Amino acid sequence: MSIQWFPGHMAKARRILQEQLKWVDVAIELGDARVPQSSRNPLLQELLGGKPKLVILNKADLADPAQTERWLAALRATSPVYAVSAVMGTGVARIVPMVEKLAASRLAQLAGKGIRPRPVRVMVVGIPNTGKSSLINQLAGGSKAKTGNKPGVTRGNQWIRVHERVELLDTPGILWPKFEDPEVGRRLAATGAVRDEVVDAEDLARWVLAWLEATYPADTQGWLPGKEAGDSLEAFGRKRGCLVRGGEVDLLKAAQVFLREFRQGRLGRFTLDRLA
Image 1 (cartoon, one colour):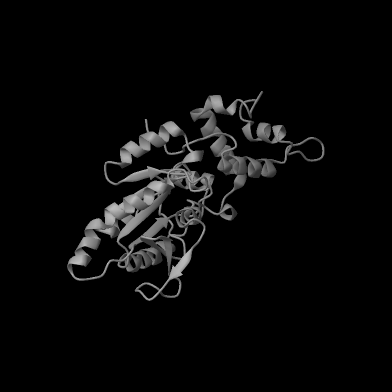
Image 2: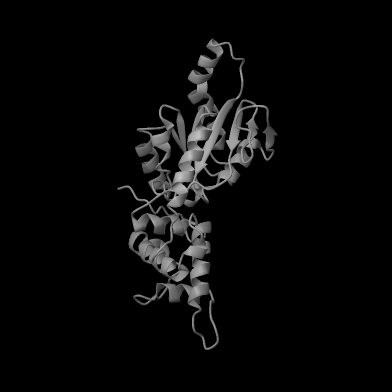
């Protein structure tokens, strides 16, 4: 399976990130708990320098809980990290207190220079489909109020008051990760981070199915009963009624249904980046 990528976006992303980081006190690196490593931005740590960072693994409600705990333990060695579900609101309440803690030193420095107290300024960095909008809405309680009259308020940028003590620099555009390993591309495509238009749905579905059967064999038995070797996608499509005239399985439709149900967590909670 070949996935078309866009390395030209990396140079633009680097310039944008370097400019925007000047205006924030803390960066939130937003990842997907199903792909905790593959969904992390390889540019961020390089460009952050000494700026504080909080790692958030969103969509924890869709990930393997045991794997999430292992990833949290591993990532805590370098940064504060939380697993949350922005859609459900689980774990989100811990974010603001941690952001304030991470920014305390910076705000104290500003106060020492006679600068009046102001909210903590935060930027969220994440690849597509990690749930940035859902997280912002949870933090803001559904109300996103723009603020102005400060650096960074330019066309394409806006400050959003997500809390009485926290402002978020919301930025347009997509910050894509660069990957050399095709497995990373497949994992990101499986979770919906790569546009479906540039992916062969049947190939991707077959890859995910094979991976699930090898990694989570007990979980596949409920929706692949009586499957013959090599016919996973066909068996799934037949069970879901993805049939055409003559009783043949519409494999493209089967792949689309499978990927949708996989991404929604209807087939189970799975983590594609594994820690032993």
